[in-house]
Length: 294
Image 1 (cartoon, rainbow, N blue to C red):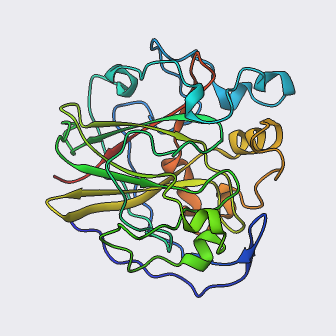
Image 2 (cartoon, rainbow, N blue to C red):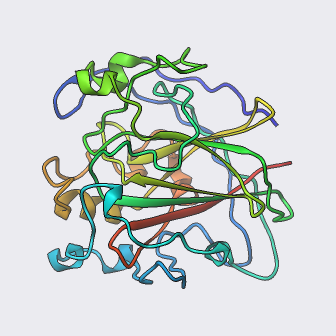
């Protein structure tokens, strides 16, 4: 199943921390998705596993001391192991709706096969766990899942020199023509789903840029054919607390766009929200199931 080509609104001005460029994205049709009788998309969910502290970061956030346990400085601070597949267990009976498409956006170019996509950039270290399943909740192995997002300052990397597909990349908008970004490939990578339909990536929680809620892009591909292009976000309260209190993000303050204002996620934004919890090493665990028609 190949995702439809989606249109975007014309560019307009928006401000990075250091430079100013802009884009507003058009509203996209939203699809519902989850697995099991309970809703697996709420970011207030917690999971019992060896690497998670089982703290609900959304409900516990709000006071400064709540952030004393968060790691900083990037993925080198990680010591916890990735959790096992029980992370994605929600119910014994499977009932699903397909994951909806979202716009690719102007900041995509094809990246490399890599497990740690941070390229030693700073930020709240993040375990990114995705599981790909079909409508019967069977895991789908051998699929490529490609992920890309911005850094703590809302800037995308822009070194397209080795990319096999950079046709839609808008360098000025995505990098702000910053020299470091133009030389970089940070926060981009491809992994192949295992027998459980799963990939694990090391990254850092993304920052924000004006007119968009904080988000992570992903693409599903098999045999060089796109199966799905979409995005996931994080709850408003979680983003506000991290951006206000975490030392790697507080220099910019709260995002100027929340989920309810975001023109891409639309009114059903909760269906596109990561589940999150805090690992024992203080890193962030962000996880989600992706459901496609095989």
